[in-house]
Image 1 (cartoon, helix red, strand yellow):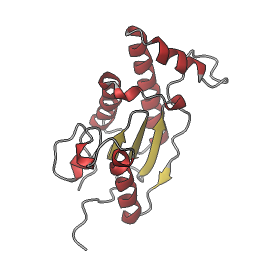
Image 2: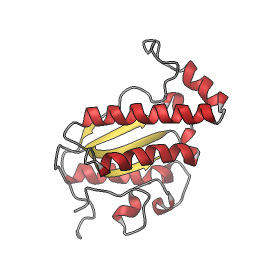
Image 3: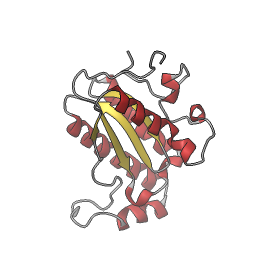
Image 4: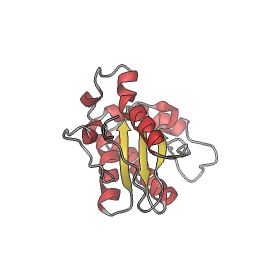
Length: 178
């Protein structure tokens, strides 16, 4: 077997596979402005050494990550809170009433202090236990757009770390490559 393009890096915490889904699976990230909010937030967390990003794919209604951090629950919570507020504000400023009605309708009843809910609760974290599992999760992430029928080649999906691992130009850096 040749040299692997995936390496396990655990500086500052163990890597986890995480999924963040929009409530009711609303396809909001087909809008480049909303996708940009998510990508810019991940870029910020990386730039401030709050998150190591090992892999990602942003789909139309969810985000998969392999990431690590000394305090991953806090960083993920901050990420989801910030991006939710920014996306809801963008939708309001651009009069996207259908999406806002959906985010209001699908808000969990116990979230009485807010009028909308953007992200589903939880992130289904799975600890990456070794290189074999890391490879499996990265392949799952990178082939998600192919499986969904959006592209024939994972390198054609713009919002993915596939290009990082294959020498292409990616929209986000992967800080965990060694």
